[in-house]
Image (cartoon, rainbow, N blue to C red; front, side, top):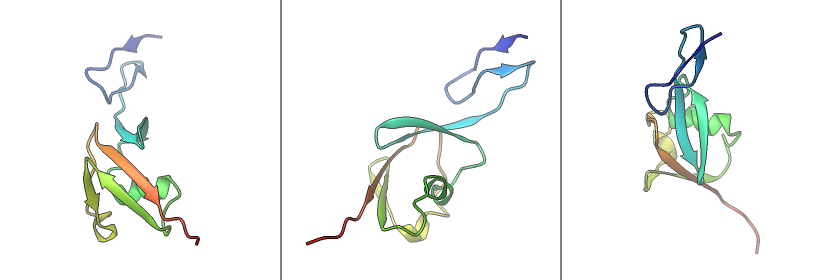
Length: 89
């Protein structure tokens, strides 16, 4: 069994000459990886089990309106900050 070194960040080690691409994102200061299929903000929100919740998302320092989640494509190295609204008095 041999491993191939990844050509750059975002490629993971693979066996037998096969390489798969992973999307690397920083979410609230923690680096996480997703399959390359999860390319929109809406998909990431769904994967984080936050769909339908009262949240705000900042992508690389810019607030993304909820209406744009499906149209917002993510790239390797993007930084997300996700905050949830908390009720109370």
